[in-house]
Image 1 (tube, one colour):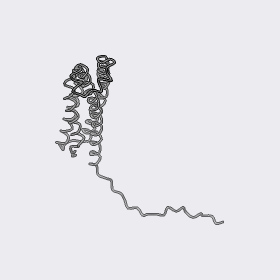
Image 2 (cartoon, rainbow, N blue to C red):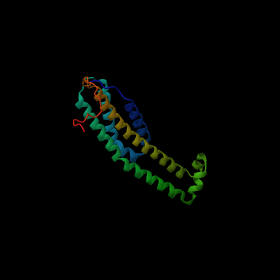
Image 3 (tube, rainbow, N blue to C red):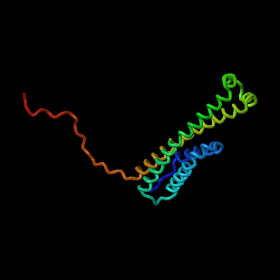
Amino acid sequence: MEITESTSLERLESAVEQFEGLASDEPEISAAYSEVMEQLHRAVSQCHDLTADTDHNEEDISEIRKNLASVRQKVRDCHPALEKAKTDCAEEYRAILGEQKDAFEKLAESEQQTSNPKAYAALQTFYKLTRLEELASEISAELMDLSGDLEHQKLQQHDTPPIGHYDAESSDPAQPSLSP
Protein backbone atom coordinates (compact mmCIF):
# COMPACT_ATOMS: atom_id res chain seq x y z
CA MET A 1 0.00 0.00 0.00
CA GLU A 2 1.46 3.34 -1.01
CA ILE A 3 0.93 6.46 1.06
CA THR A 4 2.00 9.86 -0.26
CA GLU A 5 3.27 12.74 1.83
CA SER A 6 0.59 15.31 2.53
CA THR A 7 0.69 19.07 2.84
CA SER A 8 -0.74 18.61 6.34
CA LEU A 9 2.52 16.99 7.36
CA GLU A 10 4.51 19.92 5.97
CA ARG A 11 2.27 22.47 7.70
CA LEU A 12 2.51 20.49 10.95
CA GLU A 13 6.30 20.48 10.80
CA SER A 14 6.33 24.22 10.11
CA ALA A 15 4.01 24.95 13.07
CA VAL A 16 6.08 22.73 15.38
CA GLU A 17 9.29 24.46 14.32
CA GLN A 18 7.78 27.90 14.98
CA PHE A 19 6.36 26.76 18.32
CA GLU A 20 9.69 25.35 19.49
CA GLY A 21 11.51 28.51 18.41
CA LEU A 22 9.19 30.77 20.39
CA ALA A 23 8.88 28.43 23.38
CA SER A 24 12.65 28.16 23.78
CA ASP A 25 12.63 31.60 25.47
CA GLU A 26 9.87 30.57 27.88
CA PRO A 27 11.16 27.91 30.32
CA GLU A 28 7.72 27.14 31.82
CA ILE A 29 6.19 26.53 28.42
CA SER A 30 9.20 24.56 27.17
CA ALA A 31 8.97 22.31 30.23
CA ALA A 32 5.20 21.83 29.87
CA TYR A 33 5.46 20.90 26.21
CA SER A 34 8.81 19.04 26.15
CA GLU A 35 7.35 15.52 26.36
CA VAL A 36 4.61 16.39 23.90
CA MET A 37 7.13 17.75 21.41
CA GLU A 38 9.19 14.55 21.66
CA GLN A 39 6.08 12.47 20.96
CA LEU A 40 5.14 14.81 18.16
CA HIS A 41 8.56 14.40 16.53
CA ARG A 42 8.23 10.61 16.80
CA ALA A 43 4.77 10.73 15.19
CA VAL A 44 6.06 12.93 12.36
CA SER A 45 8.96 10.52 11.87
CA GLN A 46 6.51 7.62 11.68
CA CYS A 47 4.55 9.49 9.01
CA HIS A 48 7.72 10.09 7.00
CA ASP A 49 8.62 6.41 7.34
CA LEU A 50 5.14 5.49 6.17
CA THR A 51 5.44 7.62 3.04
CA ALA A 52 8.95 6.35 2.28
CA ASP A 53 8.10 2.66 2.65
CA THR A 54 5.48 0.87 0.58
CA ASP A 55 5.62 -2.24 2.76
CA HIS A 56 2.98 -1.45 5.34
CA ASN A 57 -0.58 -2.46 6.01
CA GLU A 58 -3.78 -0.97 7.35
CA GLU A 59 -2.79 -1.80 10.93
CA ASP A 60 0.33 0.38 10.57
CA ILE A 61 -1.81 3.29 9.42
CA SER A 62 -4.32 2.72 12.21
CA GLU A 63 -1.53 2.66 14.79
CA ILE A 64 -0.08 5.93 13.48
CA ARG A 65 -3.54 7.52 13.52
CA LYS A 66 -3.97 6.44 17.15
CA ASN A 67 -0.59 8.00 17.98
CA LEU A 68 -1.60 11.23 16.24
CA ALA A 69 -4.84 11.34 18.24
CA SER A 70 -2.92 10.70 21.46
CA VAL A 71 -0.42 13.47 20.73
CA ARG A 72 -3.26 15.82 19.81
CA GLN A 73 -4.92 15.17 23.16
CA LYS A 74 -1.62 15.82 24.97
CA VAL A 75 -1.21 19.11 23.12
CA ARG A 76 -4.67 20.08 24.33
CA ASP A 77 -3.84 18.91 27.88
CA CYS A 78 -0.88 21.31 27.98
CA HIS A 79 -3.07 24.27 27.06
CA PRO A 80 -3.81 25.24 30.70
CA ALA A 81 -0.09 25.84 31.32
CA LEU A 82 -0.04 28.24 28.39
CA GLU A 83 -3.23 29.94 29.60
CA LYS A 84 -1.78 30.34 33.11
CA ALA A 85 1.45 31.83 31.80
CA LYS A 86 -0.51 34.24 29.64
CA THR A 87 -2.75 35.27 32.55
CA ASP A 88 0.25 35.73 34.86
CA CYS A 89 1.97 37.85 32.22
CA ALA A 90 -1.12 40.06 31.76
CA GLU A 91 -1.39 40.54 35.53
CA GLU A 92 2.30 41.46 35.75
CA TYR A 93 1.86 43.96 32.91
CA ARG A 94 -1.11 45.58 34.65
CA ALA A 95 0.74 45.65 37.99
CA ILE A 96 3.78 47.34 36.45
CA LEU A 97 1.76 50.07 34.74
CA GLY A 98 -1.11 50.56 37.14
CA GLU A 99 -3.20 53.53 36.08
CA GLN A 100 -0.75 54.54 33.37
CA LYS A 101 -1.73 51.53 31.24
CA ASP A 102 -3.95 53.50 28.84
CA ALA A 103 -1.35 56.22 28.33
CA PHE A 104 1.39 53.61 27.84
CA GLU A 105 -0.63 51.78 25.18
CA LYS A 106 -1.13 55.01 23.21
CA LEU A 107 2.65 55.45 22.84
CA ALA A 108 4.51 54.26 19.77
CA GLU A 109 6.38 50.99 20.23
CA SER A 110 9.79 52.69 20.44
CA GLU A 111 8.47 55.09 23.08
CA GLN A 112 6.98 52.20 25.06
CA GLN A 113 10.35 50.47 25.04
CA THR A 114 12.20 53.49 26.40
CA SER A 115 9.58 54.83 28.82
CA ASN A 116 8.99 51.55 30.68
CA PRO A 117 11.21 48.62 29.62
CA LYS A 118 9.65 46.20 32.14
CA ALA A 119 6.12 46.85 30.93
CA TYR A 120 7.29 46.65 27.32
CA ALA A 121 8.96 43.28 28.00
CA ALA A 122 5.80 41.97 29.70
CA LEU A 123 3.71 43.11 26.74
CA GLN A 124 6.05 41.41 24.26
CA THR A 125 5.94 38.23 26.34
CA PHE A 126 2.14 38.38 26.29
CA TYR A 127 2.18 38.69 22.49
CA LYS A 128 4.58 35.75 22.28
CA LEU A 129 2.36 33.62 24.51
CA THR A 130 -0.65 34.53 22.38
CA ARG A 131 1.26 33.39 19.30
CA LEU A 132 2.23 30.16 21.07
CA GLU A 133 -1.43 29.58 21.87
CA GLU A 134 -2.31 30.07 18.20
CA LEU A 135 0.45 27.68 17.14
CA ALA A 136 -0.71 25.04 19.64
CA SER A 137 -4.19 25.24 18.10
CA GLU A 138 -2.68 25.05 14.63
CA ILE A 139 -0.65 21.98 15.63
CA SER A 140 -3.79 20.33 16.97
CA ALA A 141 -5.68 21.08 13.75
CA GLU A 142 -2.84 19.84 11.56
CA LEU A 143 -2.64 16.60 13.56
CA MET A 144 -6.32 16.05 12.86
CA ASP A 145 -5.88 16.91 9.17
CA LEU A 146 -2.91 14.56 8.88
CA SER A 147 -4.87 11.74 10.45
CA GLY A 148 -7.72 12.38 8.04
CA ASP A 149 -5.32 12.45 5.08
CA LEU A 150 -3.91 9.07 6.10
CA GLU A 151 -7.40 7.62 6.42
CA HIS A 152 -8.44 8.95 3.00
CA GLN A 153 -5.31 7.59 1.36
CA LYS A 154 -5.87 4.23 3.02
CA LEU A 155 -9.44 4.10 1.74
CA GLN A 156 -8.36 5.07 -1.77
CA GLN A 157 -6.10 2.02 -1.88
CA HIS A 158 -9.08 -0.31 -1.68
CA ASP A 159 -10.57 -1.56 -4.90
CA THR A 160 -14.02 -0.27 -5.55
CA PRO A 161 -16.46 -3.16 -5.68
CA PRO A 162 -17.96 -3.67 -9.10
CA ILE A 163 -21.37 -2.24 -9.59
CA GLY A 164 -23.71 -4.49 -11.52
CA HIS A 165 -25.82 -3.37 -14.39
CA TYR A 166 -29.34 -2.62 -13.33
CA ASP A 167 -32.23 -1.91 -15.65
CA ALA A 168 -33.90 1.34 -14.89
CA GLU A 169 -37.46 0.81 -13.83
CA SER A 170 -40.21 3.29 -13.60
CA SER A 171 -40.77 4.85 -10.22
CA ASP A 172 -44.49 5.21 -10.93
CA PRO A 173 -46.68 3.32 -8.49
CA ALA A 174 -48.17 0.08 -9.72
CA GLN A 175 -51.70 0.12 -11.11
CA PRO A 176 -54.31 -1.02 -8.61
CA SER A 177 -55.30 -4.63 -9.08
CA LEU A 178 -58.93 -4.04 -8.22
CA SER A 179 -61.20 -2.29 -10.70
CA PRO A 180 -63.77 0.21 -9.46
